[in-house]
Image 1: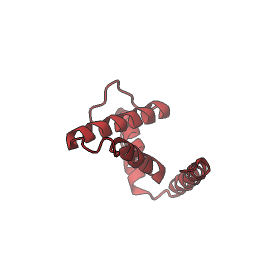
Image 2: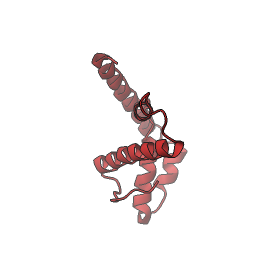
Image 3: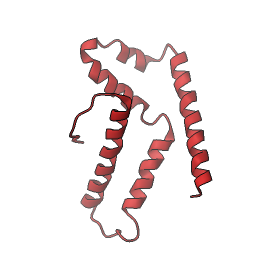
Image 4: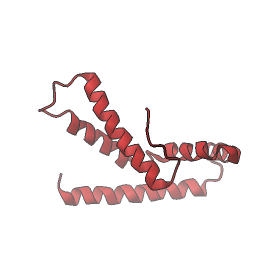
Length: 115
């Protein structure tokens, strides 16, 4: 893809994410968020994890990026990899994505992820 197209897509995804975030904050009757907000502070780490999971795909950018990585993993040169090998490569990429998500957002961070 052309770099201008990629930049434009990123900008559109950010606009979409901002719109979705503002709609969530305006909508006080959102049952899912109310449920997680009602959980005691003793489970603060769990609440943060739930918020992270609930907002991972508020935009399609992250999902499309993962599919792009999958296409890079299983290309014409590596089309003979077994399903287990493909799954391992995808899991490594996903762990890398999640690690960046949790570290950058300040959520609960562990050194080793087991998915």
